[in-house]
Image (cartoon, rainbow, N blue to C red; front, top):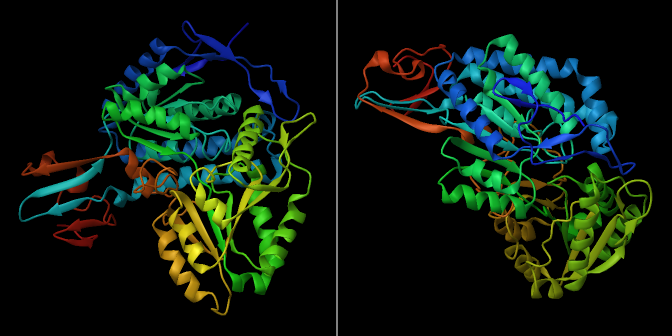
Amino acid sequence: MTLSPVLIAGAWRQAQNPVGDFTAVNPATRIALPDVYPVSGWPEVEIALHAAQEAVSILRTAPCELLANFLEQYAANIERRADALVEMAHLETALPQIPRLRAVELPRTADQLRQAAAAVRDRSWRHATLDVARNIRSIYAPLGGAVAVFGPNNFPFAFNSVAGGDFAAAIAAGNPVIAKANTGHPGTTRLFAEAAFEAIQHTGLPPATVQLLYRIPPDAGFQLVSHPLIGATGFTGSRAAGLKLKEAADRAGKPIYLELSSINPIFVLPGALHERLEAIAAELFASCSLGVGQFCTKPGFVVLMQDAASETFLAAVREHFVSPPGILLGAGGVRTIAQAVEKMQHYGAEVLTGGEEVAGDGFCYANTLLTVSGDTYLENPHALQIEAFGVVSLVVLARDAAQMQEIARSLEGNLTGSFYTHSQGTDDALYDQIAPIVRDRVGRLLNDKMPTGVAVSPAMNHGGPYPATGHPGFTAVGIPAAMLRFTALHCYDNVRPHRLPPELQDRNPTGTMWRIINGSWTQADA
């Protein structure tokens, strides 16, 4: 049996003494795909760490143009490999080729790489700060160690460990990446790594700037995120796995940025229901079912005021949910959804439709809508705030405005929170009571819009308070803000001018770079 090669220290090679192997499974057929991938042990991980450190020393003084050229060349390579990438990702995830993979995810992935390249060239993201009178100057710079990226299963392109947002941000900030593929789509990740390695060879970056391991044992993961040579880690995945990695990283004082879980509450206020009930019901289902509910921004928690209109709304939403389910990413999805639904029922939620696995060739779970009274919810609010990674949503029926506020105060941290309100302002007073409470519990606040679209915009925050992420001050989407996670703040005190980085010298190195000089943003020379 031949195992797929790993990318280590600038070469594709067979894994050394693998501790196991695995195959990807086609979720639409439940049949294993032919390629077999190694599980790398700690010795191989350590080789990758030391190889990355050699790249660190070169990247430290590499011209920014080199990184920008790599990111742009890589984006072009991805586009040239579009057919192979789309076909492989479809086989490994059952996500539709059109429009999801080819028309949405692949262009988004190439675009965020190009946005990262533009930020590298512009240099303003580095926040160069000059106190000329005291001759103290500071700048955001690379970490001095590799960034480990653990990618999720639900976005095989846009969040891939060798192509997604964490990867683009880490590379643009000047760090090498050690990618740990998601085991749901190892073949897709290998194709990305091949395209990245070609771009490395074409542009002349250090060979170990990008390395790829497919799977490592948990103990090796703990050692990786806490190793003295690691700069930081980006992780997107389950709360249980992420918190174990965070514990190991925290003990060693190593930065780790986690995206964990979110129920993304939606407050539909009474005036909005009376104005456009059917439209909101359709929007809610469309958002819940996008990607078969396997989006971290899926609205899994809806709050209504209990009255005749909310009953009509529930009936309308139920009609949408009573439809054929899509194919989930794997057997684990079916299992975790079933566990979440069972737990919600245990704490008093009632299933209006769904609530069971659907037999067939693929991994499917029925679209599931649940409801619970505000009184019952508030008896066990944390037990009922469960991320069910599928087409599942819980509707909480509040007794009155005061209870709606109490429900808002009970919320844990989330990526998003949304409000649907009357277009002519009849909900404004209630909105003003509840929105400030929700604002402190979410990273992104939306009005009259579902949260599942996450634009790659400099103004985007794809983050939020715990347990949505491990730190509320950072975003995983949005260049250049996402790059700051993978930097260190370097200060230079009374350092001679010729020894300063170009960005901190008196002359503006590009003529257009924004810097803070003596307290003011400017593009001028000091």
